Image (cartoon, rainbow, N blue to C red; front, side, top):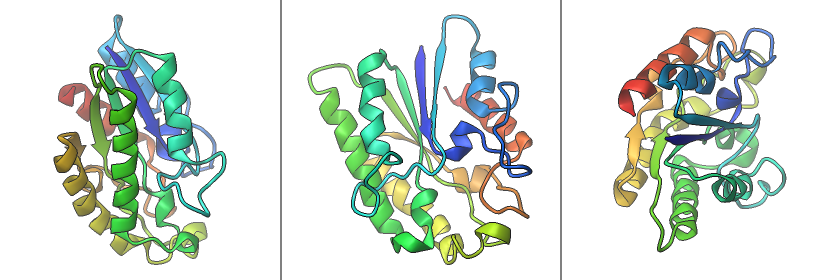
Length: 199
């Protein structure tokens, strides 16, 4: 089974403690690979600041949809885990939860079109965890706390329309309470354990 983990800095593995990347013994895709063992390939495709929306001012090298297709062409994918949406909550983008959910819908349609007349991989959507408006991110994510909760509802509706799998990241995972956005090591382990049972 080949599993593509396509996400932002929480898939990349940014530590909220020092801003550096967690090692391969801590990041959730690596932990998932260890648990699945031989015969399975887990592809790490996380990128800090990656967004899911594809409208200005989102164009550029952080745009999710721009970098998904090369992975789909390069690998035979059985499962795609999408972990995106948190960066779209930033104040400067001015997006409502349903705007971000529409971008998820577009991303899923792009995947469906890529696999037209071919076997579709299973799509698993992990909704963003909570965002705490604290510390250095307080201004950047002003207003995001409320929208993150609503985004869970909107994402679930999108996955139901496309018959995708939905995991409530808001209920499952907790970001660092003093940093506000990124997951600590124990959350990476929790997610890897959860996904192992889920898959």
